[in-house]
Image (cartoon, rainbow, N blue to C red):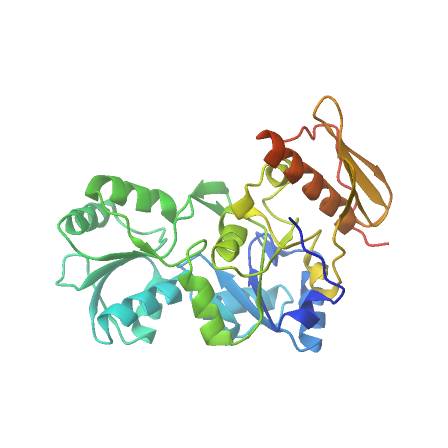
Length: 336
């Protein structure tokens, strides 16, 4: 269940690891208030890292995009799943190893940065590395699948099944991973969230003794943090909505919950229970006889989400089915 703290998260955690899409920006626009919240957290000496499962873009490209959106970012602030994959490879194979690379520029640069030699899919290699790349050819996918089946060690940047594009949600690198894995009968080592390497690589590069994961996705950002026993803040500006939140399994539940990134700058009250009623701030929540969640009161959007999550998860754990939320409408995120 949600934890409480009487200190702002930016004062309690010396590193905030921010997912990008849905947390800092959505498509080509910054999330409202995100740049201001990040700047304020930095003013209070919190380090900020921008982490992404997208292995196609280089850190320079990501940092430039953030800067265009009004978010101060340098190359050193960005950590990608391609960099995490390169670290996994060099730790096992050593510098100078030849890696057949199936992906885009972000993957190739990350391999070279670690002293690895990216080679073609037909060339002699010590391992295969794969990442999202819009120009990857089917003939190369087929050759990679055969080589993995025949014993070539394989590291995948991530297993995201979808990726946001200008024309809508499209298949992500996880679809390719699933295809290769089913054909070859082999599961890769995965570098990106929810696997551990990307989180470890971020701490290694950016530093921080008390890191906090901040994300909008339950199945990657939050599950990844839970898996390594790292505190996590879920923000409700991205793909997780009310139906997904109330159905979250224990391994997908964050430590803290806020409407947006300004939650970094706030203390987080812990919801309290009085019988069947959960209370936080000016809000109360309980499940009625029809298994519908009823929320009453007034207060901040943050506290509304907290009572909803706490009451819903207790109901789910007790009965095995998500509570009904069809009649609920989240309040405005404007702070009072």
